[in-house]
Length: 613
Image (cartoon, rainbow, N blue to C red; front, side, top):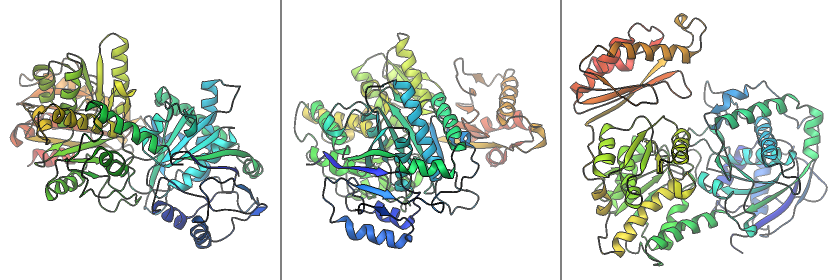
């Protein structure tokens, strides 16, 4: 019964399992959305077997496991199985509204900061937080858990499940999934899929290297914010401090309900129906369209077979759809130059109508038209703004701070909307759009240049697959109305967008150990740099500071603009420059160089390379 509960089993909190070979094989299963666990006899199950024996046992017995099975496993506890508990600075794991850390050893200078005990403490803390938020006493809460293709995914999935179980919550494992699907599971009302879940956890570190991993958290209200993440990490640190051999073994004896569900079939079905509705109910509105997908070996490979093909599209030439947490082909990041070159080549080589590329966990996206022209960064925002403003004329488009002046002109002069440029950070942009709506200023799109984009109609969720569905809706509707068959209808929508000939981002790093900081926080030093820059441009007649600006110092001049701001998380001052020539870009760079030359703790080598060119 496709999509129904696949397995229902009770699992004793087992010892911490470190098994790279097991994880590697898990990632390469034929169907990554459905997996089974090793059967275990009633009685004791020793985890003292070596890794290769456990991996071979898993492979041997997997095919014999029925689709719906109940397991009862007693894991033998011993002092040898309890992990050593190192000191961990939990607060350093916060990355805005996410948690991220190093989950796999092997990279020099990057010690593991997200081992299983830490993961279990974080999951238990989320359980505490959720119980406090929901205040439900009449039933057990349940949390859905999914992961992307990273090699540490299975290990962390089991640790998260244990942590939630210790907090008294039921766990629903989705296996390989996308971040947007995890949020959707808190909204779907279908008890046969154990939905809605009270909370959801996505195990992912987006486009970061193979050794990293982390968590994103959701309730039906959306993704958790910075304050919530800080609270969870504080709880986790307290839980971790109380760990001991005795209570670890006690937690291993706790029994929690863990069920496996093929929720991705629900999520993809919703995407298919959205395109069919836009085309007036046609079953295969994309029939004849040739669309290639590049998933970058992340979690987005489902889009070709589960979304495009049921709609009638040809997907021949799609690439890197297989989940592989080593990301052997290119970084799964629509902002990465090599990634965009890969999808562009696939479009041109296969003479496709459209190319679609996702990041690892499918909350970001980009596209390429039949001529190889990218819909990325400002151009992707322009395309989606054109589509949204056709549906909601005159409304506000919220973007991050580094969007171009040409985009503002396009949105306001060509499309008749309003451009509200806010701060970097996808959660900042989304929250600002929500705030504007609550204050009576209608907004339906919040989008970052990174490819994070959220729509009001989709519960303000940054969903790369749903953004692509909006674009596919336009293709399907245009053909149904006799307006064209190819991606030219999309290209025409961004006609008139003024684009810079030079677009740069330079990263000016702050040396936290430099004597000039005098023990102060790098943020204080960075703010001092920004204030000095602000003062220095006041008397320059060639420069004009942006009258409305929410982040850093944005200045127009020499036919272009620059923005110097302080990074959200790192001791870095990113400098964005856009201009119509290299000479003008250098002139803008010289303005910044002159203002910051007195700050010795600031590494200006990247800026020097530009100005000396």
